[in-house]
Length: 137
Image 1 (cartoon, rainbow, N blue to C red):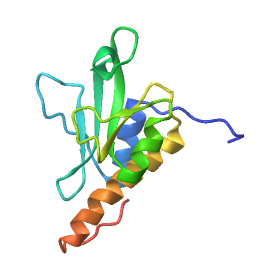
Image 2 (cartoon, helix red, strand yellow; image 1 turned 90 degrees about the vertical axis):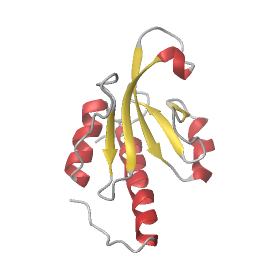
Image 3 (tube, rainbow, N blue to C red; image 1 turned 60 degrees about the vertical axis):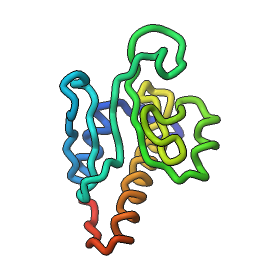
Image 4 (spheres, one colour; image 1 turned 180 degrees about the vertical axis):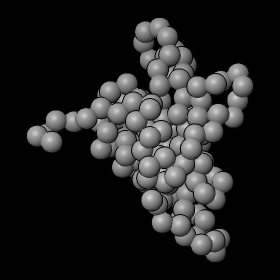
């Protein structure tokens, strides 16, 4: 790819999670049918895809925007939040989670890297508890 950045959206995230980790999205809330949880094989969440009203995120404009919440290394969160497309975690612990806009602001490579980090952070927590490690597909 000649230096261009590829955009990633909701369906791309869900497809990547399915292909890379065998994760199928779980829609847990009847009142929020477009919210999808990505669950590690150990049962813990490593991602949440949502459509959130722009005003709830402090963004200008009307309507909703698709976002992805991912677990992130705490020391990286501040640097990400200074960049366009990254926000304090929506409805998650802001010390350990980050919200990423899925509107084309953040490129695919960065989002995939963050999903990998989130999955690995969840897995590291599992490994500490002595559970077996499962390799991604």
